[in-house]
Length: 350
Ligand SMILES: NC(=O)C1=CN([C@@H]2O[C@H](COP(=O)(O)OP(=O)(O)OC[C@H]3O[C@@H](n4cnc5c(N)ncnc54)[C@H](OP(=O)(O)O)[C@@H]3O)[C@@H](O)[C@H]2O)C=CC1
Ligand SMILES: CCCCCCCCCCCCCCCC(=O)OCC(=O)COP(=O)(O)O
Image 1 (cartoon, helix red, strand yellow):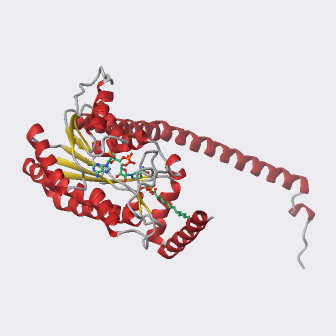
Image 2 (tube, rainbow, N blue to C red):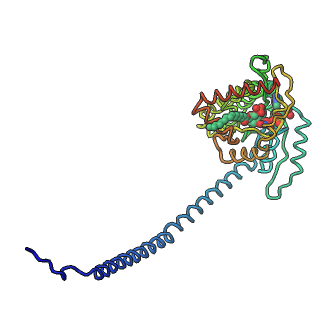
Image 3 (tube, helix red, strand yellow):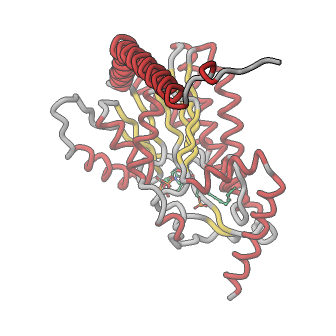
């Protein structure tokens, strides 16, 4: 029989003391390990992370500065043709590119309105930049012959074009069933055939110089189609397609192509829109009034050109989401557009 003596077992107090000692020992070793780790982390932060962070910010700032300087150099003295320069986005582009030191050729249908813009630009003084008095060329984009003559005139007087901004355009309001074909043609002539005729007329000289930049002011409606805008949306989809093809074809000649797709802008576009029978709509829509300012969008155009961007969508959340929805979930998009058509019809009827 094995006899267990009482002293073989430590007393409760002794065990507790021992345990407490072990815990203190463990905690203090943990504490000192933590202190060491903390020290190492601080060393790592001060010797690696902070210099890396400052270095990256510095490199980024330098990169942006170089980009900005390159953009300024690119725009200074550049010959820039802007169509639709009498109003809205075109007029604001004229102000932005004039301030950047470009030699402008302002185009429009109305000579007096063009002279007004020239007059307004002449009152802008920029002490840090040499600015130039713009030239003006009067022609109607829906008349191909006048477009070709205008291109000839521009090349004759200025020798070459560095940047062509195809901005002019008209919009449309109406149901497809009621719209006479001449109205569809008028919108296509102004928004599509006119700009591509001008582009084609100036392109050979750009190819010869292996230098040039062509900008198309399209629209969100070049990517999505909304009810009662058939002719307009079709003309902008055609614009998007044409200039995407052009971009691919002229890259080998170092010619850049930028497509800008704005959402609503506070301009006269809605007021000047044509309707199903060809008459003027004459109303500034709520969406237009609540849009971006033309000056804001003109700055986006200037930066996009300066940075030689290939395309820019400049729109609010809803139109931007609508573009993604159209591509990712077309059935839902189509059903939303059908609802929109019903609602608009109802609102018009009441
Ligand atoms: N406003 C908006 O919500 C949006 C506009 N856009 C696009 O922006 C561009 C500029 O339009 P915006 O400034 O808004 O509208 P505006 O109506 O204010 O300006 C249109 C310009 O186009 C010119 N134009 C119209 N028809 C012709 C023609 N047949 N030949 C020559 N020039 C012509 C007008 O000149 P004239 O003085 O002779 O009439 C005017 O200078 C358009 O391409 C438009 O589709 C894109 C998205 C949204
Ligand atoms: C998951 C949530 C998705 C939410 C998507 C909602 C879709 C709502 C539809 C929005 C339609 C936006 C249309 C924008 C049109 C536009 O910006 O056009 C610009 C123009 O060219 C204006 O010309 P207009 O003559 O039409 O004034």
